[in-house]
Length: 542
Image (cartoon, rainbow, N blue to C red; front, side):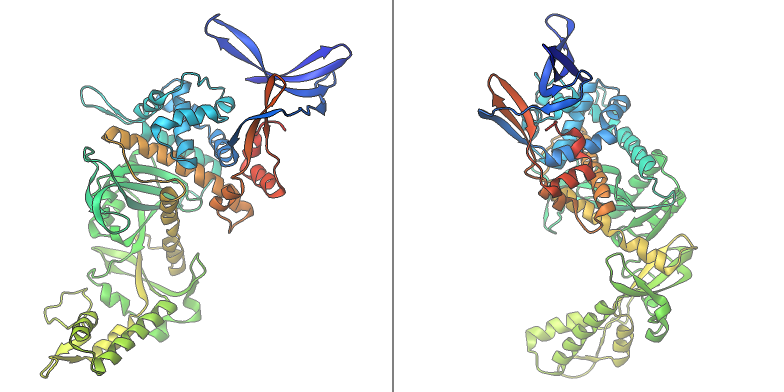
């Protein structure tokens, strides 16, 4: 720990910053001077800050975003928690912090992280001896998060650490006890062929390639991560729900409502969620039994009334009306019929254009396309399938438009069906809960954009499991700082704020025979952001 030291020379007093350190060679504690601060009075109050005569610039290190995220890590006691939960020495926990900061600031290769940490102010902030820091220290941190013993036993300390950090942010932010979680998955390209998690599957760009998956659960209000874990690349999103619910139960998370994408909605998943004691809000998948009938429950006049108007978090206006009914093999399910007026108008215009083309002479190729788009009715149509607008008939084309089917299709334009297992929820609350799930998609965009989640190059199951906890820490630090920013600037993004801080640097300058540290002069915006986000607390004295 550093401490101020007042030295008297003649009739004057001078203030220094010193620290104690362990001399390995002499095997005793010694003191050393970190920096000279300037003239002071006998009580240590600074009278005249040092004004060095600069003869050369020693080095410059960008510290704006790094200082912000380190401040968040210190507020969350990341190092202390990692050391306690993983039962490792403090340097190992500090290496884990270094991996998390690298993830959220740079995403350098593992072999380069040690050099980056040594050049950064992190060792000074952490009082961390990095004189012999190397790649092996960070591999040791990953082993502490997840490793496989010689007998094949998998040690997963990362899960416990994620749970502990989740409890930490929940205690600080005081999110409501019944708040919602969003759950989603993403698939990331994998380079290699030795990782069991990596299999052929759909990548984020919809191409088929070798991918690994990540499942992420975030909170509704502040979008903090609750859990992050890898999943097999070929596994469908629906299969991942069972494992996620089991992990949340093991972590002691209770009294919440899961909000999932409709790709994960199924009768089996709904039963698993309810069995665990959770509620679920979601969108009924197209083709579900009873779905088509539910879309047509009310006429436009009965649904599109002022009392049924709701506003999405994004500002878009919808009409929504709820009722209790049966669907997804559940007898008492709260259902909400939602219509988006803009989407309804677009669908009607598109249909009108296709029907007009059909009245003319579109040509053989286009006629085949129109037949597919407008759908030829199948007398064996199963319940829940969308009926076609065309029926077979005698003549050159072999089909004609069914006016009654067009009327039924018009009624369902722009409509979607939401559900909730909580029978007390009303239409507006269900809409707000479901459409706020855009937050988790934003979390994945953050992970794959500013945090550079991709490509994955780890070659073992243990390494990828460990990396999931590093990713969790990066997402937590990101959302933690974004929460601070949104309190004052609700519409400003953290990425924009970090861009404004990109040229804040710690500069080491030479003055005579000494080298001193100074932070570059901050403009008004930078000063405000550093104070708001907590970064000013770790900057060196100017």
